[in-house]
Length: 129
Image (cartoon, rainbow, N blue to C red; front, side):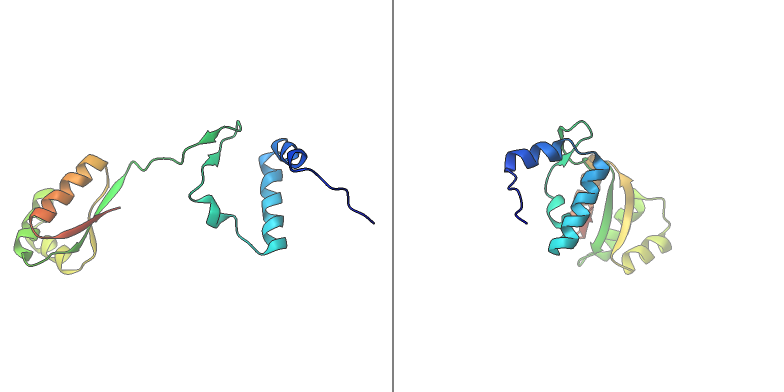
C-alpha cells in the first residue's frame, strides 16, 4: 500500500492546529520512534506561548552567592562573612572552613554582585548562581 506524500507546508499547518496535549503526545511518540530527546534541543530554544507567540525564557530574579575559596586571607574573608550576615565568629569561621558554602541565598542581582566584589576584594573566590 503506497503512502500519500504530505508536503512540509501541510504538515506545519496540521501541527499549528494541534492542542498542547496533542503536541506533547506527538513529541513523546517521535522520541520513542527515533530514539532521540527533544529536551536537549529545547533548553537553548525559545518556548512557544499558549497563544502561539514566542516567549523568552523567564529571567532569573533570585541569586545565591556561594563562597568557593577563601584564598590566602582567611581572616579577612571571615570578617566579610560576619559583615554581610548575622553570623557570630564561630559560625562564620565554620562557613569558611567548609567550602563551598552559600553565604546568601535568594537575593537580587545587584546585591549579589556587590557581595561578590566584597569577597573578591578580601581575596576570596565566589560564584553567583
